[in-house]
Amino acid sequence: MSDKAHKPATQLVEAGRRKAWTSVAGQPGAVVNPPVWRSSTHLYEDTADLARGRPNADGHFYYGRRGGPTQWALADALTGLEEGADGTELFPSGVAAISGTLLALLTPGDELLFTDNAYEPTRAIAAGMLSRMGITSRSFDPLDPAGFAKMIGPKTKVVMLESPGSLTMEVCDIPALAAIAREQGVISVIDNTWASSLGFAALAHGCDISLMSLTKHVGGHSDLMMGSASAKDPLIGRIRLQAQYMGQVVSPDDAALALRGLRTMDVRLERTSSTALELAKWLKSRDEVSAVLCPMLPGAPGYQLWDRDFTGGCGLFSFILRNGDKAARARFIDTLDLFGIGFSWGGFESLAIPVDPGKIRDFHEWPRGQDRGCGLGVRLAIGLEDTDDLIRDLTRGFSAMGHT
Ligand SMILES: *Cc1c(COP(=O)(O)O)cnc(C)c1O
Image (cartoon, rainbow, N blue to C red; front, side, top):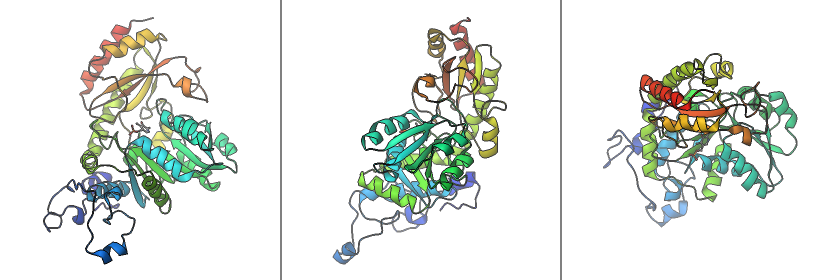
């Protein structure tokens, strides 16, 4: 069982390994890992047992839709890692965790405020599904807590936070934003995928609900999709019910893969963070680059807040090319060998994609202090490759780009 008194590295080893879930042939704790318990039907002793029913909570057999020991072990492990959480609900993807949580909290007539640097599908959920249901939404400047406070009205029920921001990497003053929300009776939800609960203790910093796409750091091997929501009682109960109304389940096979990924998450994050930091420093020294948006880099936008609030980072960051020519950016990315071109991140392999968030943002320039769209962005997801090899690859990319 995970013990919150232990440091994260130790917790990752112990997490979710309750004796009841690692028992085989009547021997408690006989195996290291919770086996993949494939089951839809759970059997009852007799009709009296059936009539008694089972508590609607992890650890109680009922029916496959409420999961089994493999999923419970993963949820338990994630709860243990999120300081202050009473429970965790698993979802089939990170997006399912976002939409499921918002649906659990909002009803027609309510308003959602979301940070302008939110993950793009979060905006799409707000503009599409939620608006159709009569739930209005507005974005706020992620770097302006006072402006956010002014936007809260009687209809505002939920605020959706994210830090660092998807693509643009602004670090928000989450403790300030969450405190404002709490004071006004607004529930704060944070998409904590970038840092994970190892790098940012979301609930301890005042957020009510912490979401993660487990597809990224927890899975860690680009071979599964899953999401999670962790919160205190009774909020986690509301999210759990919503997931059950929607029939959201994750397979025990995927849960076992996620648990396997979780065991090495700390070492993978340490390695990808340190490589990313080296690359960020190197990129900053390059003429081709006008800005490096990596909050772990001293002097970069958001560094001070990151340094104050976070205990870790990851391999995901962006930079802006000085050359404003899209064809040159395409040549740069297309020339890279070690960086795949694809969505997602948090895997063992490096990725690069072009990013132009100016088009989807309502607020301010990117990065701060420069005109919107003044530069073309590239987002890198750093994997476990050797730093020198990655630098050589990026150097080749810059050569192919040509100078302007
Ligand atoms: C990828 C991602 C998600 C969505 O996760 P999926 O598992 O791909 O659905 C949510 N938030 C952020 C910040 C992400 O990067």
